[in-house]
Length: 75
Image 1 (cartoon, rainbow, N blue to C red):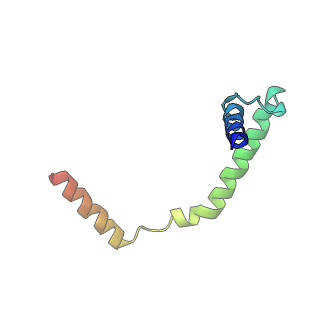
Image 2: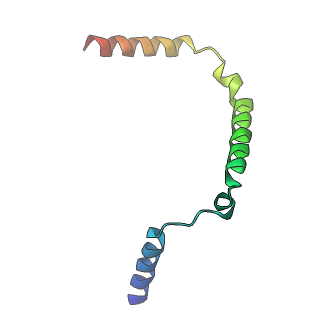
Image 3: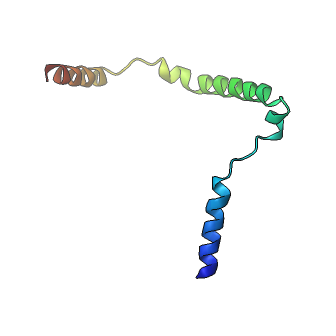
């Protein structure tokens, strides 16, 4: 049982230490890779979801939103 206690306290100590920056960021090259990843992610998400975001909102959902807005506005 004592061994388990030591293991759990060791893991807490390890997690509380600040982590060093990855080598790419420390060398100054991390920013470009972060920008490239962000651009790739943004393009991919737009490609997947733009058509869904451009769909009209169903009338029933608009009715529910308006009814809730009226209910909260009257309170």
